[in-house]
Image (tube, rainbow, N blue to C red; front, side, top):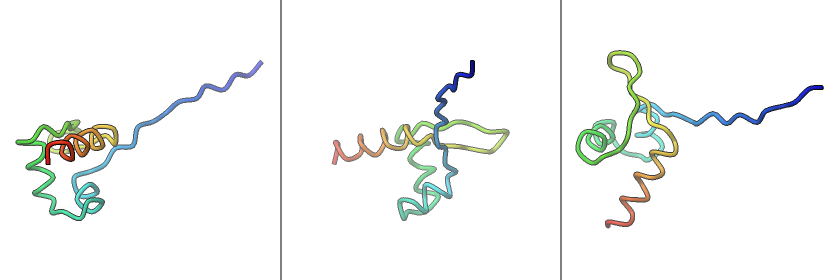
Length: 66
């Protein structure tokens, strides 16, 4: 009796990957999480990852306010 569980793994991006995806500078992405509420996850001492769901929510919020 084998049962397969469907597990979903959220996509996470580095600052550089988000910057490239959105065609902005890496510093812009950092400003977003320092000042504008983009949620991040710390990885190690200096590492940062941004979940796909958090990025989408942040962009949707930005689109509503502009």
